[in-house]
Image (cartoon, rainbow, N blue to C red):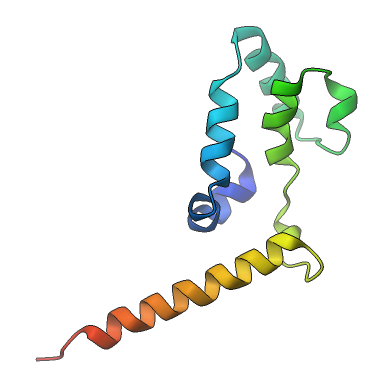
Length: 103
């Protein structure tokens, strides 16, 4: 699983990115999986289109191109999505604690 998906697990799961990655990953046959794993182990995803001409592998590798910095770059669409997610989570936590009655 991509490192960024692990670090921001709840966000990427809620937005469906993790499920998309898993579906793409599981669609690979044995040879494609071997190739994908070799590329992933190198941890260099800048020019994935030059590394393989297989669209199924490309679909998996595209998930690895998302970096932590993308979530903090105000010009990135993921930043906007993560900001909305954070606000939602914060309000849900507040609502939860607000609903608890102290004895």
